[in-house]
Image (cartoon, rainbow, N blue to C red; front, top):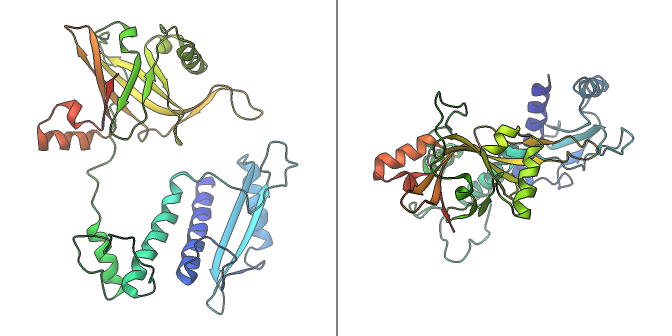
Length: 331
C-alpha cells in the first residue's frame, strides 16, 4: 500500500507541475493566473484513508497535492496534510509548505520544465534571447525543429545519447581465498586527488594516528564490526549525497567502495547510529596501483559502471587507470 500511495502522490505532484507549466510557464506556483485552489477534490473518505495509511505505516507526516482540470478546462488543485513535521510537534503541524527530500523524483520536474522551454522555441511561444554565442540548442541541428508536437518529440529523442548499460558493481561477497594487500595498511592511507569531478579524499585506517583519522574511524566503528574496521579504509566525503567513503578490502589491492551518508550519533531524538546509501548507485570497486619496487601506492582506479568501463577498454585498449570512471592519484 505504501508503494502505491507514493506513486500516486508523486504522479499527482508531477501532473500539477505539468498542467501549471503548460498553461502559464510559471513552474510550481500554485497561485499562478488560471490555477485555483479547491476544497472539493479530496473526499472525506479518501482523507480518512490517508490518515489510516499514515498510522498503519508509522509515517510521521504526509503532504499531498491533487490536481485536475475543472469543468472550464482550467487546472485546480487541493492541498492536504496529515501528521507532524517535527519531533516536538503535537502530531498535527504538517503543512503543505513543509519541504521534503524527493531524491531522484526531482528529475521529473526538471525534465518537464526544460522540455517545455525547448518546445516553446519552435512553437514561437518563447522569445527570450538565447545566451550570447548560443544560436541553437544543438550545433548539429542548424534550425530548431518545426511542425507538429510529434515531430518535436521525435527530434529531442533522436538527439539524446543512450546509456551503455546499467550499473554493474563487483559483488561484495569475499572470494574463496582472500589475499592480503601488496603493502602494509598504512601505505594506502593519505591524500588522493582526482581530475574527474570527485572531491579529494584522505584515506584513514585503524592504524592511522592523526586526530582526524581517529575521529573518522571512530565514527565508522559505531556501525562496522571490529574485523571490518581492521580491514577497511575510510574517508570523509562532504557532498550533498554522501558524507563519508568506505573502502572494504576484497582481495589483493581491490576494495569494494560505498559512498554513504553516515549518522554515527543518530538523528534528532533517536541517537542510534545508522547510515544511508543507494546500493548499486553509490557503490562499486576500486583497485590500487602499487609500485612494488618503491613500496609505494601511486593511486587507485574507481569503477562504478563495469559495462561502461569495459566499453572504454575495448575502444581504446587502455589500462584500467585510463578506462575507469575515475582515477585518484596519491599526493
